[in-house]
Length: 157
Image 1: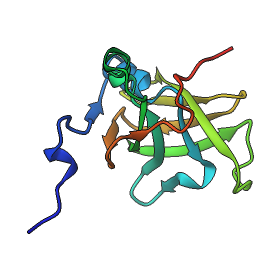
Image 2: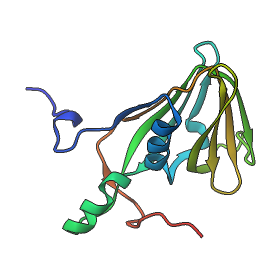
Image 3: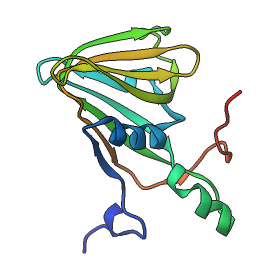
Image 4: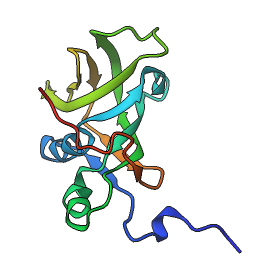
């Protein structure tokens, strides 16, 4: 006997890759209002990879949850950026181990020959700027969805 796997459930986990700005817009929409502890970011300079472990609001399920009257959901997801040459942070203290960040959007400003800067905009005027050799961003759900602790849809002032 083996344990059930997430993939065997009614809805499959997301596995998306963005290699252009149209793709990135889709991922940006799906990670809007994701939250993460500042400790859940890692830059592996040797592998040129930057990764974040997010608690993502399931925007793709919002309408269905409202239609059937069930709770809104979040899911743990990994957001990985490949070919990262440099990482800079603005507007928050990475040393504050108790800090929780809220991701608002992902934007790409192309440079020369496929290079560019990926900006992860955070609530509260914070941001991460990742200089990349080429745009490659992956989003992968890694747990089953769970009831959103607030029970509400995220909103903005």
